[in-house]
Picture (spheres, rainbow, N blue to C red):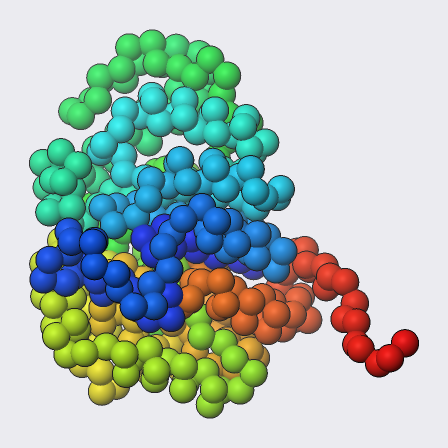
Amino acid sequence: MTVHLHWFLPTGGDGRTLVDRHAYAANPVDRTRPVSGVRAPDIEYLAQIAKAAEQLGFEAVLTPTGTWCEDAWLTTVALAQHTERLKFLVAFRPGVISPTLAAQMAATYQRITRGRLLLNVVTGGDSTEQRRFGDQLGHDQRYARTDEFLSVVRGVWRGRPYDFDGAHYQVEGGLTALPPDPLPEIFFGGSSAAAGPVAARHADVYLTWGEPPEQVKEKIDWIRSLAEREGRTVRFGIRLHTISRDSSAEAWRTAGRLLDDLDPESIAAAQAALGRSESVGQQRMLALHGGSSDRLEISPNLWAGVGLVRGGAGTALVGNHAEVADRIEEYHALGVEHFVLSGYPHLEEAYWFGEGVIPELAVRGLLSRVPASGAPILVAGGR
């Protein structure tokens, strides 16, 4: 089992700070006032990140979904025209789109991009966010609906009429006339009791946020046992940020600078908003630091500072390139195959990781395809 490396597209904006904190400002809808150091997620900047990820050897890029970011389907199909091999892990919410239409969109996407689509199914753990999109269901009901949604998607991908009669969906003769080829792999996450069986029945890759290794192992064992009861095999992935530098001291200085940039009001506002989330995974992220910035290295080279102000993935691998590779190798030994990574800013951090950590992983035999080193460096010497 080799490692699959993926990067992240910051379609909500990027910069040299933890820009996500602005979603928790007193008036988050006001986008008229410029925020210092924030890069707009225009297609030109996102194309730079996508091209860098492809050149550096990342297999795919994750594109998020939600109020504060651009639509993932439209953005990535545009970026596919700027890249050649890079795949796009498109996040979407099953509750706001018909499963038959989603299956058709995926099939079209595969043909347009020649097979470069991966799907990240996001059931949603925040009722306030869900209601913005017209979804009134509670937490466990949303997972029950996702179960039905994915049953319909896989059913209509067979290319012949498919009927389904469930509590949330009733489909008569649903099909995709031209099924996607290949079928997109489905990435799925969720830490609650309602999420586990859905992952076991439908996920190709179960994706967890970056908890300490012993907690990740517990999740892997849990999902693996549920999948075995369904007669299925599920692979595993992890979502992490990275701060990798030539020296450990330099990496931790960078983490400290990100922390120093956060004022107590921003942290308090973010923690209050995140604390209202129904997501069990989000509550597990919050428990790693408890809202305090005093003890944020919660496991060797695993830093919880991002989660002080950012929802979702709240931990980063921090250290020199060999140390970061050590931690990836440690997770890999537990059964983690897919690593979905990011860093602030995403363009520069892609290069730090790609030029520093990827060669380390290649030397250790963890990559199936070693990226090309590129053109030789030309040194001016008067000749």
